[in-house]
Length: 163
Image 1 (cartoon, helix red, strand yellow):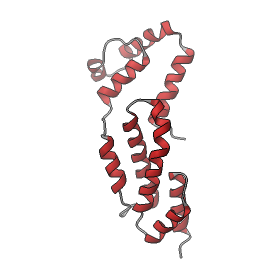
Image 2 (image 1 turned 90 degrees about the vertical axis):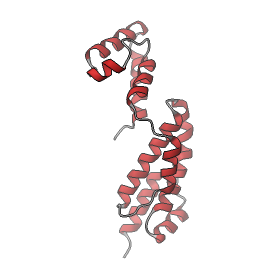
Image 3 (image 1 turned 120 degrees about the vertical axis):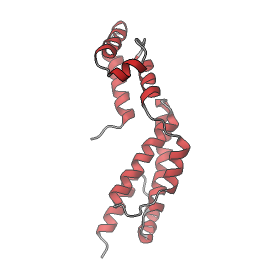
Image 4 (image 1 turned 60 degrees about the vertical axis):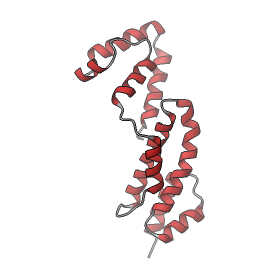
């Protein structure tokens, strides 16, 4: 199972909050900053942080390439299968779905639970509209898939079963 970036962040934050005492967090953060960061990170990040959330926010601001939610949404609405396999096309849609949801949430983990199902419906529609085969498009739309994974698997199964 591959964990998404936001899932890793959530698990890390959960572990830090649950198992490390408040007084020790600042020391741990500073230890990691001094001993486990590259020269580039040492130059770009502050010398100390009071919380893990502050550190994560600063790392995101300095190192994560921000993608515009509008740009990603446009890509998601315009994407076509072209010469990709259904599996490759599905993976590309899944990546755009994750990128769009993270860009819209902008670090607010509470929004992720709201945005994910809304954006997944858009991704299912984009996948269905973007497949090469008109026959597959019709089948996907008639099946009313509940998840992107289901839509991708349905398309792959239907393609395999074609004469």
